[in-house]
Structures are given as C-alpha cells and as structure tokens.
Image (cartoon, rainbow, N blue to C red):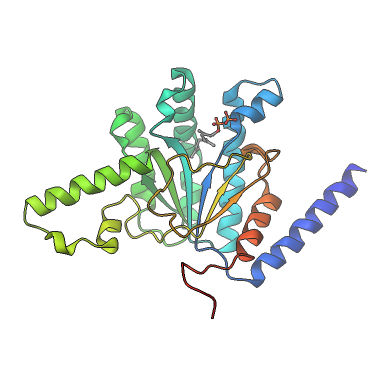
Length: 258
Ligand code: FPP
C-alpha cells in the first residue's frame, strides 16, 4: 500500500535523524548538485525541467541543514565552465536563480540565513547582479545557516585571482613574500573566513571534483551517491545517509589515531 510505504519512509527518516544527532555534525557541507539533465531526460522532459526540480531539492536540503544546525552549506550553482552550455540553458539557470532569490529571500532572511556568493558576478547582467546583491546585503548580518552560492565559480580561477591579488599587495608593499602562508592565502580566496568543508557530496554517481573548491577540500571527506540518485532525487533520507557516512569516517589529517 502506498500509505504504508510512505509511513515506512517517514519512520526510516526519523530513525536516521536520531542517528545523525548522536555524533558530531559537519560544520560545512559542500554539494555538487549533479544529474538534473539526466533526471529530466529519463522522464522525457526538457533539461530545464530537471534544473527546476533541482531547485525544489535544494529547498529541502536547506531546510534539513537549518534544522540540523549546520553552519555552512556551499552549493555549486554555476561554474566558470557552465558558460559552454547552450545559451538557452545558461539563461534558464540564471533565471531560476533570480526567481529563487526573489521568491525565497524574505523567508530565508526571517530564518536568520545569510547568503554569500563565491565567484565573479561581473559576467552577469546589471539586473541579475542587483538581484543577487540585494539578497546578499539584506542577509549580511544574519547569524544562522550560511548558504554560500558558487556562481560563475571555478577553483582554478579562484586560485589565480588570489595569486594576482597577493602579487599586487606585495608589489604595493602591503605584504612581504615572507607573510605568505596557508592562512594568508586562504584570506585571498572567495571563502575567506569560511572554514574548509568537512563533507563534500556529489550526486549522480560521477566521481569528479569538476573544479570545485580545489584548495579548500584538501582534507574534506568525499561522499558520492549511487548513479540512481540524481540531484532531483536527493531527498532528506539520502542527505542524512550521506552525513552518517561522513560520521563513520576517521579523520586523521595525515596523522595517526591516538
Ligand atoms: C548539474 O546538472 C547542475 C547544474 C550545472 C546546475 C545546478 C543548478 C540548480 C540546481 C538550480 C539553480 C541554482 C540555485 C541556487 C537556485 P547537469 O545539468 O550537469 O546534469 P547532467 O549531468 O545530468 O546533464
């Protein structure tokens, strides 16, 4: 019976939730939301329908992250390489983001959520930039969940940008080459003041990093879902399972266990 199945699903999710709360949670979860196109194709729909469904999944993941008290959720919304997609898909993705911000920002603000952008906004139209800046400014003093949206973001581009800015500051005598260490370098990245991700999740069975947070994931635990969990399929149960997998890992950071 469908009702019975649903109840079982709810029971199972509740059990997972209890398990998750027993062990330390990741402070920072980063997600590569992969598989929207395949989700749509499987259903004979246009790829954009997959992205639209992906936004619904994102909404649920934000809700669960907030409930759990996770501090940082970083999502790969649009990469520096995504410009290679057909213009219609690029425009649809940007429209979806703007629509999402317009529709949700007040509710996110009321939940004390802070929106941060990682990436270069210059490539977007004035009106898109205005919409994004409005959401960032409105929520800038919030102290709850931080949603870091990687937008026109690439890990290599981020590192090059940091190197250029450090070089400029050395040239301008604001810095000496001897000042450069990992901490200082981190402050020149888009993620300055954001701790490195504890957990990186990629859906859809692809085992790649795709230029996401290259510097920051040195000691991040990686969880890749099975290929039958495309981003729109990534529900609360799948999210909790990924966190439980993270909690089962021994993090040694190159050392050994005591
Ligand atoms: C990857 O799936 C997904 C993306 C490139 C975009 C993800 C964007 C969203 C979920 C919506 C917009 C974001 C916000 C913040 C509202 P894919 O298209 O590569 O899927 P495929 O590998 O199956 O083709």
